[in-house]
Amino acid sequence: MLKLKHVIVLTGSALLVGLGTAQAAEYDWKFQASETSGEPSFKIKQAWADKVETMTDGQVHIEIMPINSIVGPTETLQAVSSGILQGHMTDPSYFSGQDPAFGMMGNLVGAWSNPYDFLEYMKQGGGEALYNELAEPYGTHLISAATFPLESIPSSVPIESIDDFQGLKIRAPQGMVYNIFERIGAAPVNLPGSEVYTALEKGVIDAADSTVLSNNDAQGIHAFAPYPLYPGFHSMPMIAVSINKDIWDGLPENLQVTLETAFDDMAYDLIAQLKEQDLQTLQELNDNPDVHPIDLSQEERKKFRQAAEQEWQEWAGKNAMTQKYYDSVTAFLRARNQL
Picture 1 (cartoon, helix red, strand yellow):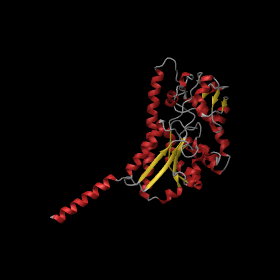
Picture 2: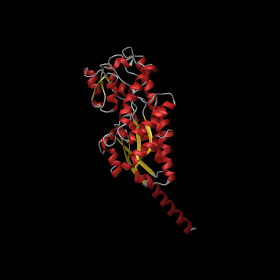
Picture 3: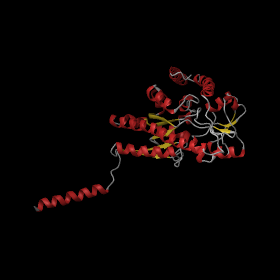
Picture 4: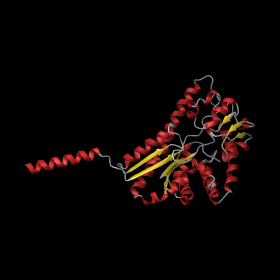
């Protein structure tokens, strides 16, 4: 009996030590995002990283880092490839300087009527495979493509047709969206997103290619731009949830499947949560006599897409991958009578 009691005491002691010591994850990664830590989408990404840890029984731990925390937003592709970061969740348009195909795939301006069409193309229409064909030579592997709801355009003047863009001073970053606004007669102004509020307040610009409706309202932008276009129709950046390719290739198949499943689910959850916030904001704006949301007609949206396709054609000719992507995505849209 004494011997048995002694064994029980030792076993209990060992169990207490084990419970008091956190077991280190077998895979401990840092992924940098393209948002600040306070943005709703960043918090959603953090929550999904926690779910991955639970789903893998603690085998995988992912720390989501805010924008600029380790490298600049245009540098995460190289940082993931070199191992400074293990992954990123970011807009591939940041890497257009390395290959224009990143710009096209990152934000094919005017292509999508809603984010679910984009996810259908990426997950069932061959988009993710094409993106990996582009990205893997850069040392990264796309686990899953995600996106946001379509961005709103806050405006200080009513925009009820594409013709109303004539001469409109609209903030737009350099690249495809800038060129497309030029095509419809606007006068785009290249400003960083951080200057949108002040530029609208001072009348430097009339409107802005900005973020989703709820984010714009939270920043107070509708005080100076009381004619927001919603639902959006122009810009919907991709979020490339990517990992270092050598790390990916070294993972057991069950972990690869778990990561793909988790981040595919995150893509739909992200849209649903942000859309709910946008709809709540829309209701509040509709109840505000000083703000007048505008929903462009389908006919006007089609005019914008037709102008956008002319710019897509220009980009398609830049190299073999831009042409391949253009052919793939336009075939997808035409099969659904969206072009």
